[in-house]
Length: 490
Picture 1 (tube, rainbow, N blue to C red):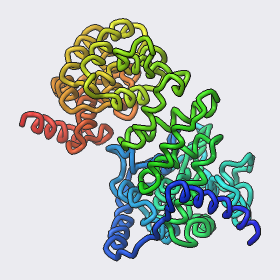
Picture 2: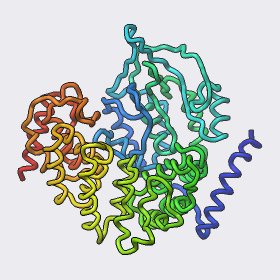
Picture 3: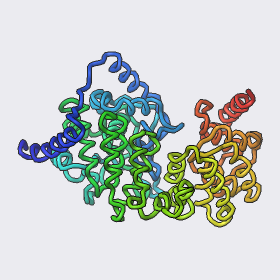
Picture 4: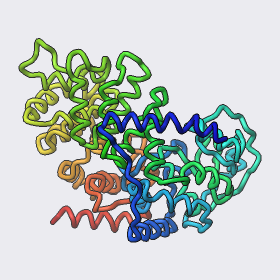
């Protein structure tokens, strides 16, 4: 085993050393003692007892998965989740300690229905993303627990329900920090729910403590993220590692990620896909070094060949290269958030000219291409919310409910408080029901949603302090709508 560990750890150490050499003797500082911080972490873990709604990594709904709340927390994110994830390596020792914490939260999940054919099974699952993790999982839990492996293990431990515990929450939060999809409860097609709870199966905690708990957490996490970041053929690893390097290790993460942006092979279809995902995740951080690396791609010899190809300047159009930089909107806006990020990053002294060009492009697409329509609306909102208001209103008047739906998607991607309020204030008084098949905002629409609920959700998405849960009781929704009306009247 010692020999195996050397085989696995040595490349990581060499990789870290290479980064250190490139960056002028970089070293990862160990986690410093901080009793006040540690006490706060314990308080946050205790707050997990209040969780009463399903969340990423703890849900029977399809979709599932585990995100990164340090950068993309939304109104549904439990506050304790968000803060613990942002603490990163500092929270890891306490999270590992509480993996077998059996205290029950307010959330209990059930997924057994004989008529529907749904079933809930308890089975330990841990993703194996490195050789060391694979060996450890197989030794402690057996090959069936290797979540990423080609294992067709029978589901035999059927259960009726599962009370979500503090340990389950710590399992999910730890996964967010270390770039692993640790899911305590997940949906599996078709009509199955898999419970991988460290409080039901203590050996999960044993595996994770052996992987993440033997040494200084900052050093362990830095080495693991650097390993992930070098896995070019695994799109689920290195874009996620890039985010975490920027957040947890800014002292060297910015430079490491910037260099990767400059070395992406855009002529390789798979790496091009990963490169788009990397840009989508890291450009919104606004880091100057990351922005500079991205802008460097815009030279005529360096630009990607598909979606971002139109963003570079053409030699024959040097006088107005900014317009050409956003040609991606016209060419192939297959990913709304990438397009909006591109416009936001390039926003500057030529923003009025860019706005005018997009305004001219909009009538060409608004009745025949919903994706481009939403992309351009989101970009217009990002550039100038006041000037985009009449464009939004004219579009809604032309397409009615479909126009409202396009506006909602645009404001979901680019929340703008004044624009959202101006468009949706009047809808706060509308109590007629919304058709979820018409308005493409599934997280804001249920079978009982009224237009006033949807309007409140859109406005609150742009002003998080207003707070609105579209799935709350009617009484609570009405109370919050009244509060939003009062806030807008001030």
